Image 1 (cartoon, one colour):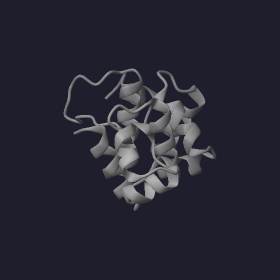
Image 2: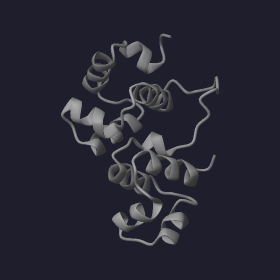
Image 3: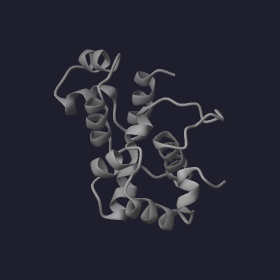
Amino acid sequence: MEIRESVKLAAKREGVSVGELAERMGITRAALFSRLKDPKYSTLVEIAGLLGVGVWELLPYDESSEEIDVGDVGIRVRVDRLLRSRGMTIASLSAKLGESPVMVSRWLCREYPPLDLLYAIARYFGVSVSWILGEAE
């Protein structure tokens, strides 16, 4: 799956058409698709913020892959699984944590998010920080 398809799916999950997303960005649908051919990180952060999702939700990945990095990708994938299991978005998690969706998304996309964020997410979902970091199953 290409990033363009991942963005379309994320927008659909949030009840937003690709045209509406482009309009929110102040560009045309064609310009949005052009930007998604080789997107800059700042573009993905902007789209994620507008949709109220985590940047990782816009990135295609294969959940069945056994080669998920324990670093930032592992964290993103594990938190994404927790969110999906509860039918939540980054926006709803951010509200529970009292933080902005853009900030939580940025933290989760860094290699090492702040420990207080990891502990808050772990407490909320009833899992260990070790599990989120990929150190425990």
